[in-house]
Image 1 (spheres, rainbow, N blue to C red):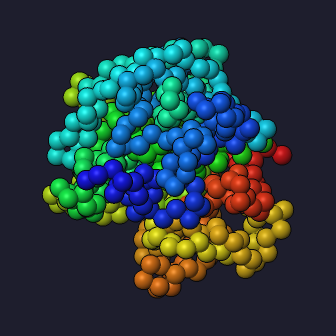
Image 2 (cartoon, one colour):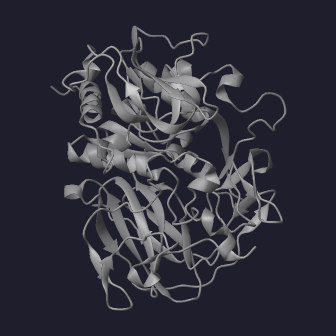
Image 3 (cartoon, rainbow, N blue to C red):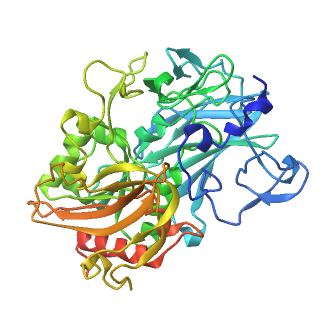
Length: 486
């Protein structure tokens, strides 16, 4: 299939068949005014922009998965100061490239800050990705550059920006973590990010847990998709995961207001590198659909210990997954979810008698084709205090992407008190009337468990064009109570 025929998949959102009501894509994610001189001598914004339908000479160009101008992945999703991260990069045609390292944060509204830049690196054309039973892997790529993380670097979410001499750019996200105590631990959903990764989006090889292609370049559905995907490969398109912006929205807002944050990713939670007793609350800032048994066990133990839980998206903990080593023995580099194709029961948590609602207080209801308002319920509750929200008020566009609700016939978690803070009607893809709900309960341990029940909560915190002060204040009311602020 020729390249021009498949460029419609470069954004990733269409190929993943995931509603993207915010138009966020992965780019641009840096809001600052930093400029650079391109190869024509023009001053242009540094960040990569989609190449489709624009003049490449007006700015940097996003590498794609067909020509692979520059693409790469990291040897690990998270590392601590003093450790190192290896980057495996392919460059076509071969030429020098550099790596700029940015940390996500508020930074006076810029959204990120450049931390360091690599020396010029000689780029090579790495071998094509390997594929077996729809599992695509680039584990055989040579090491291109090793980042030794200084001991003084701040914890946080980072992005490596790869740039070739002729101006093509791609990205690699990673996390710097340690085990210091903090008020809040932010958990980046890298397992869910990989489940949606269709790399390479080339109309031929790529596969995710949702899609693959046939011999004619037609995109196939879930029944023909991969059941195992590898972390040893780039992310499709611009190199950032789908919905990565949800986590970045929360980070920018939380750092602006001075919350004490530690960082980890979902694989840290899975591998037992997270000790919930060190934190007052665990925050899940974005779409976090795929959970392993150890992940759920650790989070349930956290709740029982008294650590609060904050879920700022919807469709959380929907599929049960397993993680396994790569062919070379590196732990947690392969992600498997048989979904409904395995022997016996499906991989849905609710189908193995462990519904999401027993942890979250609500659970997944379905997609929301068009954004709808969130309708405030129980406006006298402290979560809505000082927001100005009254009973029945509508917060425009807050129910979007996917939605959760309370299922009366499904068991609830043990609780001292429980309340629904929104009840919002919407129309599904068949035009049937549905509703979304937002939940909060207090566990017997005293832990608070909040579930927003919508994709749009984090974007309302700090995304231009979507910010809502009522959501900002409600989130602050919740976190302040968890962190025991006045």
